[in-house]
Image (cartoon, rainbow, N blue to C red; front, side, top):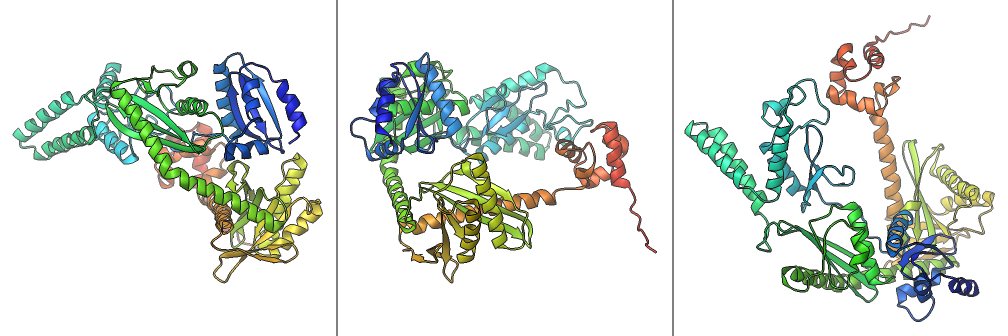
Length: 595
């Protein structure tokens, strides 16, 4: 860090709201923050004492940028967008890949009921939930589909389907259905999902008794099973308040020893359906991080009827970003929910932060051990692996680890042209990887770990020598014992360094090795599966992936398509395409006799 340069830049920071971006020596953004006063906030990082984690982050800062905004709200929105774009390693990134299942009721002319996890794709639809797991969502969906005959097909067919004959679809593909019919069913589903089951329950009881009186016992049993399902769906929950129509989200946090825990209860109809929990290292102000979490969370999740937050939360910053009523209770039932959230956050933090702290410490020590063995800094390490079957579908993967953590956005996958040997594959992938980085002036790794010992080391070194990178990148090979387990490292001089199997370095190398192998195998299987699903349809002009799916869906499978007439095929795709499809499927194959 050039202290004089940083000091001069700090003096010229404006006393205005905005977002700041900390950068490392490679120019990569490692932390994004927002501030009411950029001058005061950014200066805090470079004066005074900090905890270990913040000190480590500050030591990595080589430069910073800032963007002035008109308001603090604009600064918050900008901060969230920059975090999502750059995913800085020191930011608390609360958005994850997990999502809860919802029951979705579309707002089409002929609505459909289905299970959905992504509530952002169709903002017009109604979503009911979330459900604690997929099984609960499927049980409820099956019940609703039995009660209300919404459309079941994605694309309207030209004839009624089995669901119509089962009484589970009104067949709008054939019959004209009044809009009021679907409106009534939509209202009924909404009432049911809000806990109003009395009308449905009474109606089913009447049908059950009537069927019994007519000696239609099988039909009566069906109604009884539906009643049992209703009681299971509506009753298998833990009521936590008298107001059983309460629908709210409750979030609170607790910070201690450099970590932050955030807990949330998703309360629907007075029932805690799910609990959100996040635990992350803390590098900024916990109040700001909490606001950032909530803003990110509700970009990907539907709003509840109200949001309950602890005292001290900056509601002004949230009010313009989150479209729902905000409450900070001081007493009563909602205050009890906040207390429960805080208590859960404290307990979870107490249980987990020791493990996280230990893992972080072990990983840091492992990177230090690797750097000591290499005789240079090994903060960024890249590993390669290839996969093939008898020389076909040969692929390679490159995984990247920064400070002992996988940096998945930097992973690269390669289709290889050489399939003669693993050594040839290693030469090709190393050349392609680093020739491109040279060409694009990309960030080079500190070191390469190759799997395969001396022969692979020689192959990688030959390529790096030809590119003039031997002095820039350290090469080391993973040496395995008789049981195919890594037990040592080898450098380009052939010197072997034994690794203690109880050390953090051993476990880090094992994780790295498993990750690069998993990535290569997954890519190989994907390409192989894609090739196996190719058919004669892929060779027909005018038939792309979309039309191929439409054809196979309309005729159920390839055999059904082959048995269809040209006119039937023309009902799915244009006439000229249908003609080519029919011709391709029915052209005769003649043997050619060479004289």
